[in-house]
Image 1 (spheres, rainbow, N blue to C red):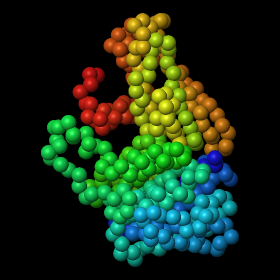
Image 2: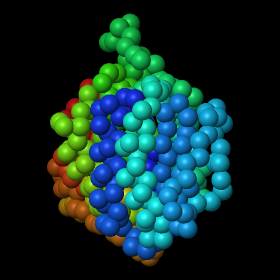
Image 3: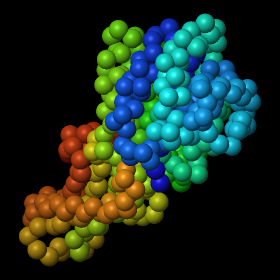
Length: 363
């Protein structure tokens, strides 16, 4: 598959008034030369408020052509081709769109956001090839699928067995979409700036199951938060990326993998589906005894990642780890091994525990 970057950008009044649209457009334009994949890279754009705005970016056009879809319950593509185009061939049209984007909707009066419909529409564009879907959202979605409530706070659930439900998606749309996106090799990264309640528990569930990431800017303001958004978006777009990857982890005889932690979709008991993967991701596994005695003074863990490089080569990368001495930590029956940044890996472990409500495990 070629490297694919599809951008879904909120252009409601909230997004323009805080300056997010301008920062996003300027940053994407500045990063076009550094996107991985060279002449194979494909890009596409979708903007949305109370309706969906597609863009025909065919190379033969002098300027991008906007196509508006107002159907939100069952969104459809207004044309079969040219919504996802080769970056090199359509470069002038893409730059013209990015230059015009901040001013195109500057007079918009729509306060609504059809984020769920935008995700479904982007899925239709990308489902045949996969890739990275970058979502820029300036508030809560208010229309169509995935519409969220302005508050989920329920004091009756605090300190009860149902409290963990507040940290999980309220609408089944999000987990259902995450499963569909992962099966089509689509990763979702969310850039969220909100002046009020953001419902991160719902919005973060799609990146969680598609090896994506959430960037949160509370009360986003262009002068204060613009440089941070620009730096993080630039890093996201230009870092080395592996595509359509799967990961398998093995350990020494006598041990077993108890659980996996991180952003992925469990395709089987020991196979992790990663539509994309990059150096900023961390994964953790908890290892326990399968047999009473483990032979040897140490235990070993091997991680194998099968992926496609940005140049189109199918590769496999193996990493081995000496987990720990079996006479030490394994006497307690469990050990945690982290790939990636160790600090962020343990944060992933803690976040999973909080989400499930199991925060009383011993250290």
